[in-house]
Image (cartoon, rainbow, N blue to C red):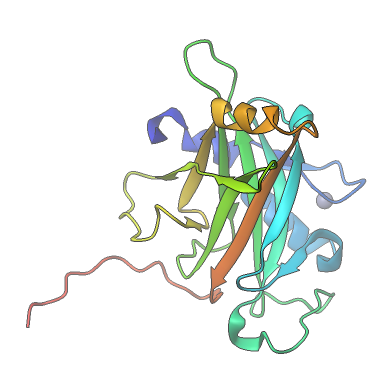
Length: 217
Ligand SMILES: [Zn+2]
């Protein structure tokens, strides 16, 4: 499955800035930097805490083949200060929140290959300490439609929980057009609904840990 999705397409494919009246198109990582540098956080980001169930909507008719789309821009605060209010405001700082973009890439139309809808998280660091449970929702009964998770690079060591959780810049979640159209055929609103639940503690200074061999006792 992963060989069908070219990583270059995702990282080099520009997406439109989600802030109203900003027409800028940028590559995903540049877009996150742009949001942090040129827009106020409260204008562009939704604050989410650990375990919050948030649902984001994408209008199916507006999704273009071979294009990246912004599903949501989130400022994720870990659980350490969950007892106090954490409004997203001009004082938002990277050390307190982890800014994340949930992107959706729609693969080109091809007679030979089924079209794919690829979800992935973009952050300034490749974070394995913060992860997300992301799924497409079937609107009739709120059932979760399972996608397939793939590592973004065959050089990466498989993460233990990668079959369940999505990590920033490390893996992606793939739905086929059949998944999407079967989902939408039961929902006349023609909106895709993605449920996102974040967990873990943000650490902007996190180093990507390499798996190490533990000496036997
Ligand atoms: Zn913008």
